[in-house]
Image 1 (cartoon, rainbow, N blue to C red):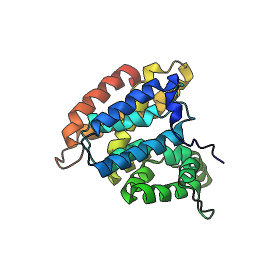
Image 2 (tube, rainbow, N blue to C red):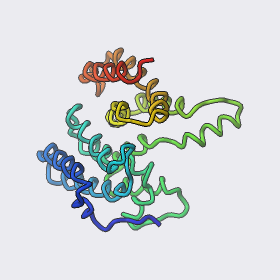
Image 3 (cartoon, helix red, strand yellow):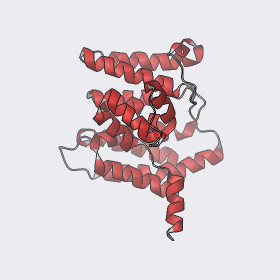
Image 4 (spheres, rainbow, N blue to C red):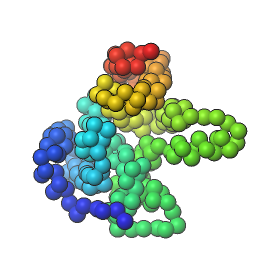
Length: 250
């Protein structure tokens, strides 16, 4: 049973000062949205905070800071104003990491389905099918299971290869989902220098380096003005190239 918080009063603790600052920024960036949209955004924020409150990030900070930064990146760097996309950015890790918490928030359960399937159904009911669809796209498959299945069929694949394949599929599948993934990837991979453990840093370099190269190459060649990222491709390529040369170049 997931130990679900009844509210977000935990934010009053001093360790969540930065979380509160990020929430203030999010409120400021979405202040011009219609009342109904802001109410849904506030609920998505509340659910995200309550689902992730016990998690820590790789720097041992409050995990809710990560989805908050992803949502702010989508708003600030990409100028995204669609409430569905912003809500999906806030909730993008909930089904992958905290499916049982999402089900508990809705006080429903369907034993015939997996926790992730139940959680996606809950998100669809609460926030709409598009938000649930985006979160579903952004939820990583179980790479360990896929590696074992491939081995059973005589194929050798690595988790890192499957991770890259997942991101390529996102790009081909849905431009809004990829927009969120790009913000998510930047928050995860754009600060490798902060990782102090040498072996962990090398593992992340092997995981993220090929993806960063693919993003740079793909967006450099993007020539469709109608694509959601076309207007931002030069800024993205420039930023990712600088980080790649600093942290990932052999």
